Length: 81
Image (cartoon, rainbow, N blue to C red; front, side, top):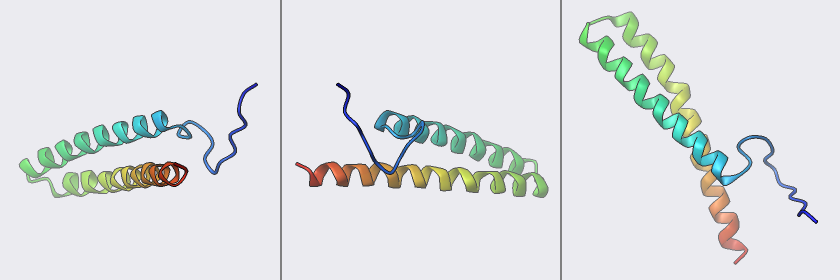
């Protein structure tokens, strides 16, 4: 019989693998957006730079949230040993 896992997280990021994949995709998006910022700065396009920076902020926030969830999971497992 399968274990009944009742926890605060449900959905695609409920498992550790899902969190790691989410973090990886966030990291790739941050890299892509930072390249866009560099390109816009190189062409001295202020509006393009502002757009790229504005697009970068939610990605950084998302990555920070995933990292916090991963750290919380580590603390949970460390306390149950």
